Length: 274
Image 1: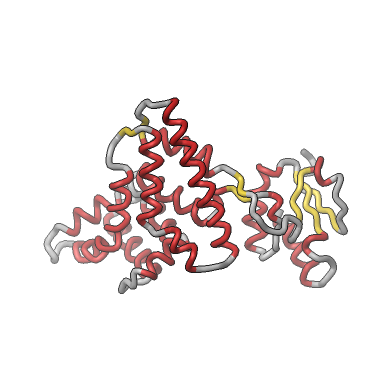
Image 2 (image 1 turned 90 degrees about the vertical axis):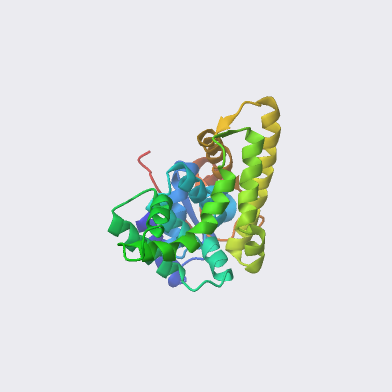
C-alpha cells in the first residue's frame, strides 16, 4: 500500500493523471479500507468518499472510543495521552482558556506517571498524591494536574455512575456525555471537511442511540458498561458513513467486481495473490 501511495503521489505531482482517473483495486474494501485511508492521508492523496468512512475513524468516533476506554480500562496513561491528542478535545481545551497548553499537559502527565511508575489508574494516583503535603514527592505536580483532569472525571462519573443500567439509560448517559463536551458547538466552530464528517457521524450516532432506546423495550434487562460498550462499538462505531459529497472526486478505491465496470486511466491492483 505504501508503494502504491508513493507511485500515485509521483503521478499526481508530475501531472500524469488526475486523482479521479486512478483506480485502486483491492480484494476486500472493508479489510483494506482502514490501512489505505491511513497511508493515503499521510501521503496527502485525495480519496473518493465512495469507500465510506467508519464512524470510529472520524474525530468524534475516536473521541467516544477513547472516553469509553478510560472508563473500561481504569484511566490508562496511554488512553489519556491519546485523548488529549484528539482535535476536538484540543479545541474544547483551547476554548476554556486555561493556563497550560495540551503539549504541556501531556508532558506533565508523562512525567508524573513515569515518576510514580504507573501505566493505569492515573486519576486515582493524581488524587492520592494531591492530598499529600507539599513537600512530598510529586505532590505539587499532582495538585497542578488535578484541575485539568477534573472535567473528564466529572463527565465520566456521571456517565458510569452505576454498575448496571438498562440499554436506554446507557444510551441517554452517552448522549449527555457528548453534551458535557459541547460537541455540537465545537463542530460549528470550524467549517471544514473534518467538521462536516464529524457532523454526519454525530447524526449517525444520534440515530443509532434512538435505535438502542427502541431495542431496550424488547430487552429490558440491566446491562453492564462493558456490555453496552461492546454493543456500541460493534453496531455504531463500526458503521460506515456515506458522506454527501462528490463520490467520484479523488482516487477511487474499489473491489474487483465493481472495478470491472469502471473506466480508469490507471488501475493499481493490491493483494493480487488473494
